[in-house]
Every structure is written in structure tokens, then in C-alpha cells.
Length: 79
Image 1: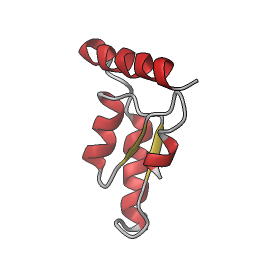
Image 2: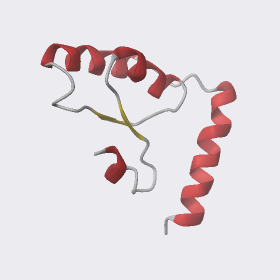
Image 3: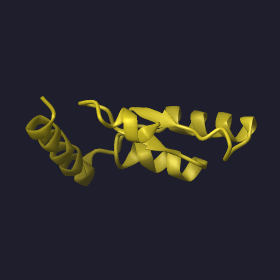
Image 4: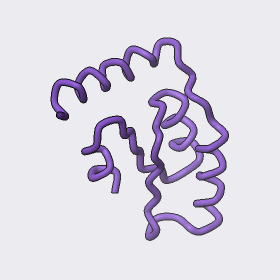
């Protein structure tokens, strides 16, 4: 899912398998789409992961440079 989603400009989709990966996908990478594997997690785990992902805001700061680089690469390669 995430591989396909990330083929589109402006998409930063991250597969998350626990609350930790959900938190840091938002905190450090400003992910805007969450991918969850149905075979890997339970419904309750998915709910906890989703809640964490939605509750976490992008930290910015030193991570802004990464987002700018991603945007630059997209602008150069995705027409």
C-alpha cells in the first residue's frame, strides 16, 4: 500500500506496526497517510496505532530539512 501511495506527489505514506512507529512517522517525517497491514495487527492494535498517529503532530525543527529534500526530489522527478 505505502509503495503505491508514495508514487504520488505530496504523499508521505508510512507503514506502521505499533504505536512507536506511528508516533515517529508523524513526529519526524510528517507522514500524511497511514498504512496498516491487516495480517500483522489486531483490530485493537490498529485502533491504538491510529489514535497515536492522529494525536501526533510534526515536530519540525531539524526534520524540516528532510521534508524540503523530499519535496525537492518530488518536484524534480514527478511531473
